[in-house]
Amino acid sequence: DAKTTQPTSMDCAEGRAANLPCNHSTISGNEYVYWYRQIHSQGPQYIIHGLKNNETNEMASLIITEDRKSSTLILPHATLRDTAVYYCIAWKSGNTPLVFGKGTRLSVIA
Amino acid sequence: EADIYQTPRYLVIGTGKKITLECSQTMGHDKMYWYQQDPGMELHLIHYSYGVNSTEKGDLSSESTVSRIRTEHFPLTLESARPSHTSQYLCASRGLVPTGELFFGEGSRLTVL
Image (tube, rainbow over all chains, first blue to last red; front, side, top):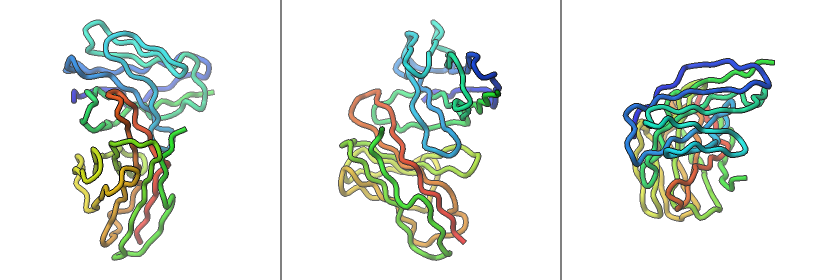
């Protein structure tokens, strides 16, 4: 699976949009972009995934650039409960196991 | 809510003891995984299984072993616990859907004295 690069940490004011970037310049055509988050030491939680189109669900939006070399996860109105480590993973799924990197530690500040 | 359960949630045990961490899921998922995570550190994949009688080692070398005799059950065993095994162990499962998400248990926090 392709390597991804994320900032180590970010801050966001409560109520504002949190935009978390991810670079995956070596992503291959059959790899999806997945986002998970881990709140404190709980098990990671699935957020969203996409291949090349932008995606939106009740938790977040995923914007993937046309060349698929980078993406942005958007939490439209961040709350204190969104404070977590966010993982961006390029994954072709199937029988390949999911491997987590270091992620971005997002701190939502009141 | 995901139906994947881990026991025990917390375990404090002495060096040299044999321990088994249990993981069960009621979703009929074929793929199951064990991850290890030290506080504030990365998640590392240590074992995974594609189905009954299938087990594979992950990216991080581990002295633990796993078995998959039943679809719903994926226990992890340490034959002789050591302080270096102190960590949190997270179990996950995934279904047949090609792009299906992973569902995680609440974790087992192991402390070896």
